[in-house]
Image (cartoon, rainbow over all chains, first blue to last red; front, side, top):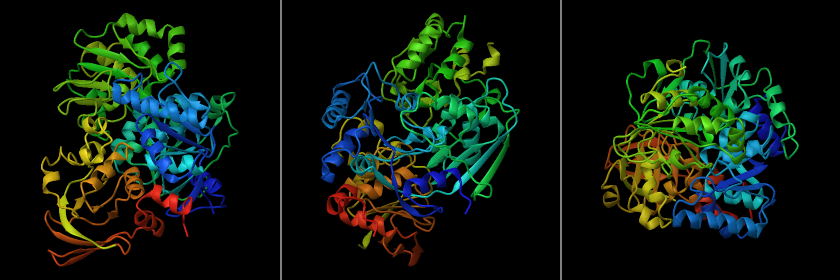
Amino acid sequence: MPMTITEKILAAHAGRDEVSPGELINVKVDLALGNDITAPVAIKEFGRTGVAEVFDRERVALVPDHFVPNKDIKSAEQAKLLRDFARRQGLTNYFEVGRMGIEHCLLPEQGLVGPGDLVIGADSHTCTYGALGAFSTGVGSTDLAAAMALGETWLKVPETLKFVYHGALPAWVGGKDLILYTIGQTGVDGALYMAMEFTGPAVASLSMDGRLTMANMAVEAGAKNGIVPPDEITRRYVEGRAKRPYQFYASDPGARYARVYEFDVSKLEPQVAFPHLPSNVRPVSEAGRVEIQQAVIGSCTNGRMEDLRLAAKVLQGKKVHPDVRLIVIPGTQEIYRTALKEGLVEIFLDAGAAVSTPTCGPCLGGYMGILAAGERCIATTNRNFVGRMGHPQSEVYLSNPAVAAASAILGRIAGPQEVC
Amino acid sequence: MILAGRAHKFSDDVNTDYIISGKYKFKTLDMKELAKHVMEDLDPDFYRKVAPGDFIVAGANFGCGSSREQAPLAIKHANVAAVLAKSFARIFYRNAINTGLPVLECDTDGIEPGDELTVDPAAGVITNRTKGTVIPAKPLPPVMIKILNDGGLAAHFRKYGGFNFD
């Protein structure tokens, strides 16, 4: 029976020749992930399972990234729970402040996830690793506890939606614009319970950073996972990086899809998601006059090297608008270091931006850039729900890094072609 | 397990921040305290109005957003017996089962606020006693019924030493 790439990876991890959409299966987990919000609950539930040791101390990754460096006493105590558990269990993949990164930037960079893997993480954006040709999905803390104990989890085999992106991408248009446009087409529940398979020449031309951005936001369409067929770009990314053997899977000709979407993206503009849903998108040229007080460039969606390079290209020799705070957050220590070496950090500082150590911080309204009532922020993050970045009467607009940088310069939502 | 109570109605796309706002979620792991603020931004009086055994009835995509288990736990600790919706965000759905909160997919258009309902999660049958109608729901798979009856996944694990799919 012909299968999709998602079905093949699930079958392989269930020890089966084939699986069909709708089946409940038990699967082996290659890596289980938790952060400083979800892992404390998982560690407590792990204690209740009656299992003493994690199934494999190299396959449980704990990354404190949401509220570290600790924002207050409560977050300090949560982070300490992770640290103590990691020590007690002898976990090899615990990442301390100064050596860490935002989890979904860090794990691919460190080669801890790879093509053909099955990864679960107690964070909804765990779907990011689909960019490598892995099956990866978000779960809750109790699921994480069970996976830490047994190295297994249960899954319902999802139906797959196939997306084919035709044409060459115009300037300033990348993975963020493709995924925002797609969510605008499907709605926030258009891919509910399903796999999103991203294909076509425009996706094949994306760098790994652009693909990671796309897969990252599959959950904003309700999807279980997003996945990009691995190719030469994937091979170049994982070679010399992967810490475990990996395997390339491809969808069979004749594989069944619940629906196939075909988009011509050769004339696509940078997209902006208006409050308060990621599906509320329009081209930047139709944004109208929206003044902003803050811009955030970073997050598990857009905190990688390519994102910082794009932002720096727009900001070089320019100044952030007097009424705007620009906050730039490199996704990992390595990205931070590379940005320093390439002179990007100097460009940001010269422009009048604040540059932070890696953290999820403002994206979820944690700290490091909370909005007051009535304030507007353009952000390269992934959600613009009511009160997401602070006060319930503040607003978040989602865009790619070039649009966020241009908007920071002009003090209103604008495309990069207005300043470059 | 047969559940009986009144309906409290909500719309589509109720996200996890509406279920329990971040400003409380990050402050405490005390579920009794969190339960007082459930659905507060959509209905400030919800916690006072809900009687033990009542149901949350919603539209499509209930529980979209974050993966945090405080959302179903806070609902459960507000003494809500089950959530009925046209569809659920998948992480919320898993978390609900794993923490012992029954969730059922069904057509909720015919249910109005205050309707008296009887719900049989295993059979997937909802009876609207106020309107005298029977609404079919997608029955929960046996493994989920088992996890629910055991009181959640951790208790299920302690009982069987792992997943029991048989």
